[in-house]
Image (cartoon, rainbow, N blue to C red; front, side, top):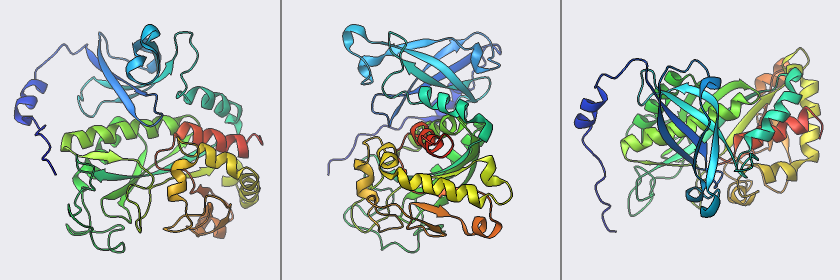
Length: 364
């Protein structure tokens, strides 16, 4: 294999410039958006001549959509509408990360702007207080896209010792994981945990509980921060739902969900009603749970490696081989939440949370 070119630069020189004092009333705003793939993020930065207090203070901007698979070169301007603002863990200080929605020249949402319709649905169900917690799985890769820490001409030992493992021969890339965790906390994202996963170099973090549209916003921003942290370490993040074929676990985006009725006393009845509605809409959910309308999940949802079959709907208590898992504590307390284990790791959380609310809360 040809060696990849060196791309690391001197952090000592970088730090010298980052320590330069600038006007304390200035803010660098990094506008972030989902590109035309529906999976990847783009960003660019502008100077703002005051410290933004909320997202409504920020200007609408634009970019060249022909370079992000979202427009033709003859009519390429796409609008950026700021929707959520976070502290910037990279530039720090008064600087901010700004999550944006994308709109075409005619002010219609772009094809991969799924936030717009999600907001409408969440507003309709606001009185039911839908809460979400998402478990984002991912893999750390070298720049040659080989799993980080794996032998270059072979495989590590079989799965077993890696899940929640400790030790240099069991976990790879913890520096990336811990840096991402701290960066999310700094930014104000509700990251609530992390752990090493079943496949070596595979990890998971959890975000939530978040109500309504905030779930999609915070998960997308946490993904951006993860990519940026990995960039600092010279590694690559993969959200592929089956990064390594064969006898290795895939990666999901397990989505925990509850309404106020589920969290109230005897909420198990509302949970059972939700599961019944899920069972009648299985194919619609499968289509919504990855960007390729089920084709990515076909590689993961095989009925093996702690997954249900993509073709069948199932539910059970403490069963990680089911479509919907009811945690044992929920079954005992007869209230709480359910876990939808079908969404893929590269899903759009706006689309996932929208269809869950449509099915369970609005009965559509």
